[in-house]
Length: 362
Image 1: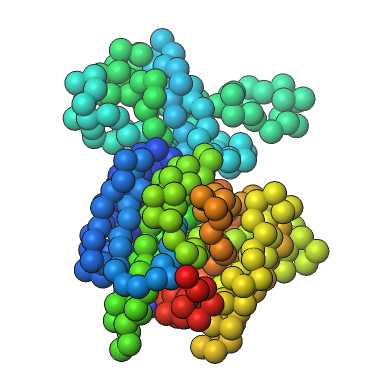
Image 2: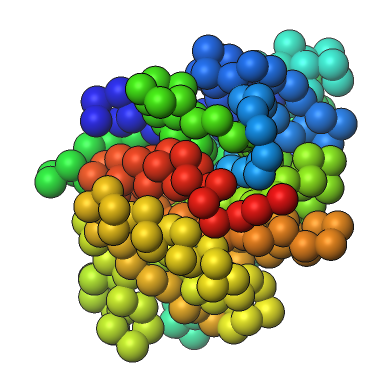
């Protein structure tokens, strides 16, 4: 478990807002090269590690990107206005520390990170009615310490600069951990570990495996769509997080998913507008879990979807499912998961890939 924890830490602390996943990709590439026959990056930026074998082929995909911000305006006094990238709940942004990532090829900057904080009008200067309302993102700004727009621009900060939250990985009690970007560095950790376990198995899986770190999932499932079209797999699994309850504010009627109850198998998401998992895929995952003594949970949700939605609609259709890591406080800087669930997700994915030929014929 220590190795997976350290891998998750490196992945979660790396920065990679949608469209700028390079730092995360480098971490993944260094890990998967020893377990794959070929590793390449496609034209959109997806990282594809291929383990050659016979059909049916299986694609396991986990998105590399995290939600973040992007500078849209620099005020004369040096304060930065921003647009959100991905699905933020505005209240979680206020007063966060952030990292800006200048283009090393632009404005004379060497690309060094610039730190800042998200600020707003202080409550001491708010009118009583203002204090009763949540601060909107359009009323927030980033303060990097600049005295003027020109000074900010000297540091490479300007319109289009990507921004991520600055958070470190910490260990809680009971083998639970917290950091930013577990959505979806947790899924990426599962992908790497599953590929490792396939390579190290006594009877190495004989089927063609495409392990794909996809880009721009948070802004439209883009990388999954293009990579699945290129690879044309016979079956696929998307590896992602799933909203865990079991804490104040979430009732059983909202979700039965909880930490330490095992991998989450999606039955349907986005009220059916996203993925409705084919029965054959659910059978594949359930029977594999049962055979190997892995507890699992089922999820039916009305909001949110994953790369599986894009993959399943590729070409003439791909039987696709989701293995999710139950995670609390998703799309915030303080996401929480259990390392036990992370391990069990990796084990389920590895063992399912070994059995793909029993369920999908070509």
